[in-house]
Image 1 (tube, protein in one colour):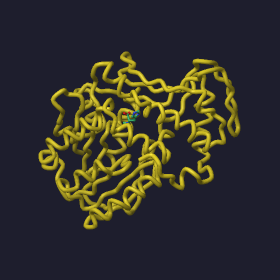
Image 2: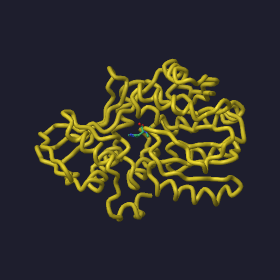
Image 3: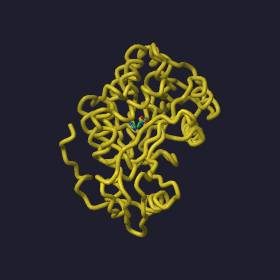
Length: 319
Ligand code: AVI
């Protein structure tokens, strides 16, 4: 449902000086960029939920089919009774589907979209009153300090949906190394990673016929307008999403439909017609490279499960 209006949509702009600096730097760069984290305001999170329902967007349903088919084996490998820490929890649906198998002692849902994750957890508490739960609104991509509300017991990080693909491989290794440091000696990670496949399938997944991914990408400009008082005219931009085979990644860009000058608090920039702002990468891994990435980050990959077409991998890796 895309119709509800949350406080985040109508409240005064909220931003930190760091965010304003980061946005300013990206917008002034010769090849302009905006971090993909700005895709996720309240509406962006709902649009991403809608993307996950699209026939073209295979990752969500392929990953779900792996959990459905191998759930019992996954639970045997990952163990029960851990503190389950869901990174980028969104609507918490993926983790909730695993509760009966993993039986977590505590569930910690972390997401950059604070209101969205708090609302999702409030609903989940009613369904699973026996599980202790915490919602944390934080950006865990650059630093990683878990607050004291997170239990000291064995930690199982849950990082589904191939969100790891939104980092460059170097950033991904840095992130997983920080995660490893939070695992102690007995923790681990259950991670979903999208695998390399034909370009036509990938292109369709990131440029769908209904235009939901286009709306998701363009909504980032709406979010930026709110954060730094920018005057992006949404209708003056178009979505571009396609596989870059040389880089092994999907790239999303926003392309100016005509020459225009955009102003924001503390800066301005002229964009020529056809000029682009790079908004997201989504790396697609070979299975062996995904395992190598985990092992270079200090994990031992204990099990890999894939679908019959080998489009997606779920990996349990131990500290
Ligand atoms: C969240 N992340 C893994 C998604 C992806 O596939 O890279 C974000 C997304 N961007 C466009 N469609 C979905």
